[in-house]
Amino acid sequence: MAVADRRTTTHPADTPAPRPRTTTPVALGLALAVLATLVWSGSFVTSRALGDSVPPVQHAFWRWVVALAVVAPFGARRAWRQRELIRRHLGFVLLASLLGVTVYNTLVNQAGVTTPAANMGMIMAASPVLMAVFERAGGVRLGARRIAGLLTACTGVLLLVGGGASFSAGDLWMIAAACSFGSYSALLRRRPAGLDGAAFLFTTFLAGTVLLLPAQGVSLAVQGGFTPTTGTVLPLLYVGVASSAVAFFAWNKAISLIGPTRAGVVYYLQPVCVALLSWVLLAEPTGWAQAGCMTLILGGVVLGAGARR
Image (cartoon, rainbow, N blue to C red; front, side, top):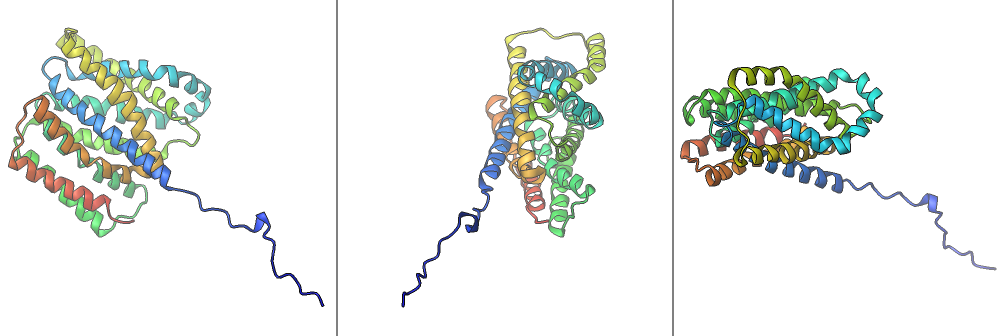
């Protein structure tokens, strides 16, 4: 009697499909968030450095004019192709433009007139907690650990602007900027599906610049223009190219890959980077009071954003 062959032939359809790899998108998202955070750290120093020579609104306006010129070759044609999609979601686009372009950077520049760059970076470190709050408003559950982190970070901010470090009216402008940026970052999760990243950047940059036109006209009439010199033009090119075109594209892409809360974890690097840059480039002192406030803020945001949903 012949012995039956017990070997079985595995059909390709019976082979389990390999699990999708998720490491690469997460790593890319974290890397892009790091890039945006490092570049934006330099923009706070720039806002402080130009505080006495370029009016805040004009600083913001020319920043976005430069950024628009940089993004236009890549985004203008794509935006035109997606004009119907943009038109259907015009309310979203205008709100994102207002928060992320028109308001946020203008407030940062206004804060830079009177607030040290290190303070600006520390106050902005609370924005990841604000992102978590906005996510909760969108239906995401917040646990006790995240709430504790929120309270800790807010305590650090209050101490910073109320006596933990030198107080100025610019600190209040910076708190408003943090709220605007947190709102913008949370809003990015609702970006319409299919809207190209370059098209979105071009459209928001264009709309945000147009929304700045009335304030630009008032600033020119009341404060006059500024004198273009190497000390003003080069910083404006930096914030227009690097801090706007490059950093906003990187941050928006990071949000789409890993979400605002996870990207916010990387944002904790910013106060340290800003403090070091302001110390090296602007000779701003960093005392124990600022270090203590920084510890509270960073501890709060790490505690809050690190909690599981």
